[in-house]
Structure formats: C-alpha cells, structure tokens
Figure 1 (cartoon, helix red, strand yellow):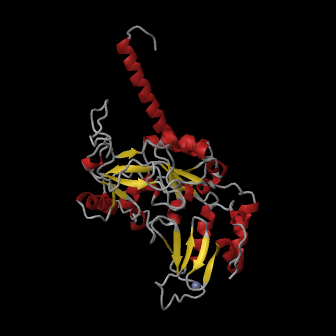
Figure 2 (cartoon, protein in one colour):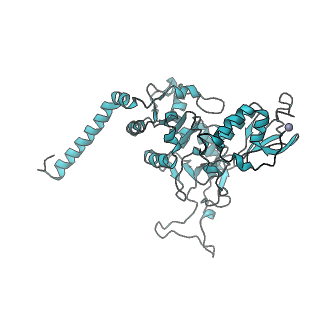
Figure 3 (cartoon, helix red, strand yellow):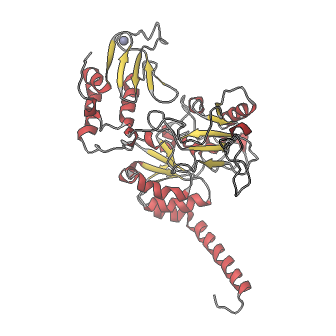
Length: 397
Ligand SMILES: [Zn+2]
C-alpha cells in the first residue's frame, strides 16, 4: 500500500460526486455500505477480507470528508486517490482529468466549511425523532413513506417533528413567547410533519421540506424560510451523465441522478445558481408534472435546450383504473411502466426511454399540445372579454 504524507490539497479540485462514484464503482462488489449521514463508506477489505466466508466483516472504510481510505486490519489511512493510483490506475487517471482537465471547477461547493447539522435549524433538542421512534406520529410517518413506495435507505435519514408545547420559544423567565402578529406561540412550527433534509455532501443539511403527515392538512409542504432555497440532491448530481430535474422532492427520489427544484417559479433562479445545469444541458431532462402547468413550462425549458419527458401513454394499470397519473410517484404506484431496481430507483432504461431531445422539441410539442394551449388562451381571452363587458359596458375590446 502506498503511504504518503503528501498534501492532500493536490486532489482538491476533484468533485465529491466523482470520488463518490469511483468508490461505488471500485468497492461496490465488496458489500459496500454508505452510513446514515453520508460521512463514511464501509466495506469488506479487497486485500485482507474474505467476501465468501465473512461478507459482513467490513474492516475497510472511506471517510468522505477528507476522502481517506483505511483498513483496520491491513493499512493505515491514505488518500483514496493514492489507493486508486496503486490498485485502479484507470479510475485514478479518469479522476485526474477533473484535476487538470476541463471539468476542473465542477461543483466543489460542498468543500466549503459547513456548519453542523441542526445549527441554525429551527428545532430544539428532542423535537426531531426518527421515523422508527416509538410514538404515534412516527408510526404514521413511516406508513406514509411505505404507502408512497419510498425506499427505506432514504427515509432512514428523515425525521419526524413532534408536537409539544415544551418546544415553544421561551424568554429568560421561562415564559412562552407569543408572536405579536399571529398571537400564537413561536416555535414547534413544523410539528406533525416529516422532515426531509436536503443533505449536502458529507451529511450536513440546513434546508428541508416539512411534509404534513395528516393527509387532510391542506398545507402539504412547508419549506424552511430561515435559509435560502436550495435544490434537493444537487450536490450529488453527475452532470456528465444523463441527469433529471423534477418539481417534487419525493418524485425525484425514484430517479437516478436526479435533483428537485420545488415548483416552476424556482427553476430559473437555480439555473443561474448552478450554471453546470445549462452547461451540460444535453444531459439534462426536466420531468415536469403531468398537468397543465407542466405542459406550459415544458415549452419554456425546451426553448432553453433542456430535454423533456414524454408522458404519452402513461396510464394506470388495471388495479388502478381511474387514477390520475400526475407525477412520477403516481406513475410508480399506479402504472406498470416504471419498475424499480433493488435500490428503489426506476430502472434507468424506463426513464431514458421517455426522455426526448430538446432539438425540434418545440415543434413536436406544438403539434402535440398546441391545441390545448390555444384552448387555454382562448378560454382566458373569453373570461377577460366577459369581465370587461360586465365591468365597463361600452368599452371596445
Ligand atoms: Zn484489509
């Protein structure tokens, strides 16, 4: 094993997603596991472990904060790049490309110093519990995830926000602070919701979705307003391969190499914040929800050169006749067209099959949806006309 005290900064320009992919590629066959918060990979050592006899003895680790490789039995910590150099020279060469090649500045935002989880987050000690916690809310939350067919490895890392007045903000005398405008106590705002953290590389998070557990709650989602909006999973996107942008976080969980932006109005600012998206637009497909807004927005993103997703022929299976397929989660639940792999992702080919190139897309979409859009505008015009007539008779329209 190559040991080196060389300054690890040499490899600083290699993006986390590339190292992460390389680790998964090289050690995937050795019972590789990524821990709960993404800080360490653990696997059977390829050099001293015995995969056949002791597949669960994972003595080798890769720590993702500094990308150190170590095996507790046979070697001391070394940068993963030195490991690859000695054992997987092709992988090493490929990664070096990031160092010196054209992708040099790819997404290294996650290397900036980040705060600890929960710092700046609007939760108090004990307010968040796991979905496996022994309380009624957690049980309901777990059921929501199971009903949505979300993979366990994902909701393992989610939380439930408990509902209790002990989490209200208090002044130095211990009195509950009342908001002068709403006249309600401050704090415990996200109670009775599933907290879906927006994990950054290394397992930290400071943005989240808070999804109502009670399906009768009309405010289905709350986004944390204490920090600027972000895209879910954007740190983990490999822009050099097909990648997908979706409106909903939950929908994006079912697709490999996907991020979500949480609604049409947010996409544009994110395209500015993450220029890699448009720089690699030929790899990018936007999967709009299968509804009226989605069709309108699809035209706009196709004009930007982003590929589009064809919902044509996505209909419920015979057990779900009458169900409306408005998004990817519905499509997973109610059709037979999107089978999942063992990690809970839709098998790649079933998504790629419906991804359509932006080239000529505008014309194709006009042919496909042109009338629908025309109808919508005629409808709007008529409404406007009628209102105008009622409100100001005599004004020519
Ligand atoms: Zn070993």
